[in-house]
Length: 320
Image (cartoon, rainbow, N blue to C red; front, side):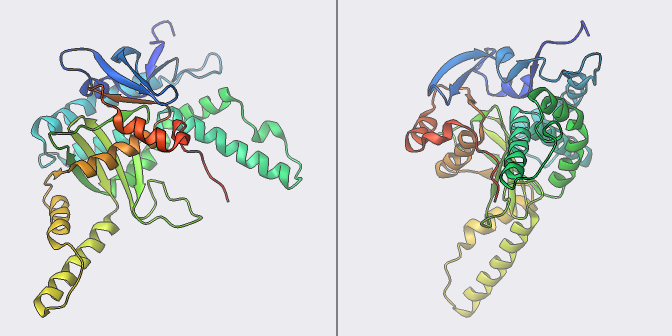
């Protein structure tokens, strides 16, 4: 236990390094609560003391070491993608490693623990409201119990999420020269293109979901529900047929054909500034508190918080 690293990262240092100021081990951090930015070392960013250490005494799962091994496997693969600005040369084995690494990153942040705590509170409040008798010790977990639970289940849960991610269409997005990707203390973001009212719409297994993972200021991985691409291909076929018979339509063939080709031929998506604002807005919305960048340019963050101060806190689990 004496060899344990006390300050443990929930976003790997090699990923943060990609967002650092050139030739420095520092990056810019924006704090949503104070609406201010500051320089911080990579070592002290997205890290917490004994983050992966169980609260129960005399028990160790070596979680930090396991994560370090997976990070070591993933780092050269992400570097290859960044250096080549392409995913064409990614092997099936490398794709599997990326999917596992993405799944772990999705589950290893404070967000997972916060959501477990919120779910426990929702269940407890519901039982109280309905006047059901229940053992509080079984329902209302302490913070230390929630922490231990998240650590115990991290690897097994990540394998399930990995399978979900593997079913998605894999793509790479490239930022325009005039803009850069932001990242945060919760860098994996999800977006549902066709949300249904009253339903859980942000899960890795949900239909029409898209998963984003910025890996550098210029590059972001994207994992897209195959149903979205299949539907797009069907709409393209209809639009092209309408053109042949002279029937009018509002479908943008050129733009959507480009999207389909990017997935089918592993061509990187070259985003415009509007696309970038959308991508970075997801980091603002879903970050727990801190947003990271290689530049001290957080105008979008400040503008979003000015319009909606509730964004200072991460979205909470909702119940019907």
